[in-house]
Length: 99
Image 1 (cartoon, helix red, strand yellow):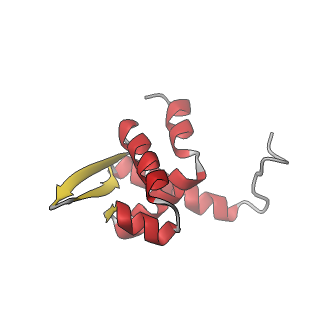
Image 2: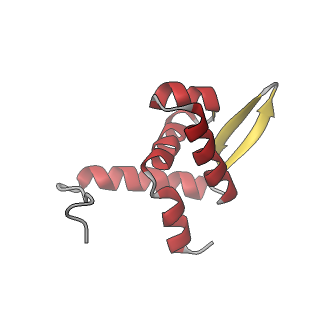
Image 3: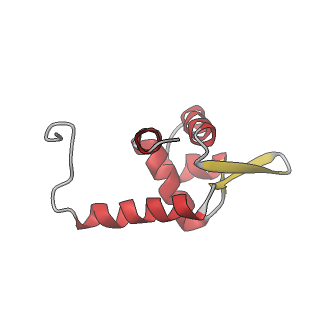
């Protein structure tokens, strides 16, 4: 995967929120995401499937549940750095003012 493909995969707001939650909790199931993000289960499952297809998250079975985690330390560091950097930028890019 090249840089633009990676960024395209994580640039969706819901996918990035999922990754931020995994930064804090390390491993969560679909129901955890649904509760914490207050989003519908099919939407969360769709985004997790996309992140898994891109290789950004991995899953393991725990009984009847699939537990999700960020797939590598490098990706975890990337998400952490993006979150930290975005908090330091005074004006966030929005659809209206983005270049």
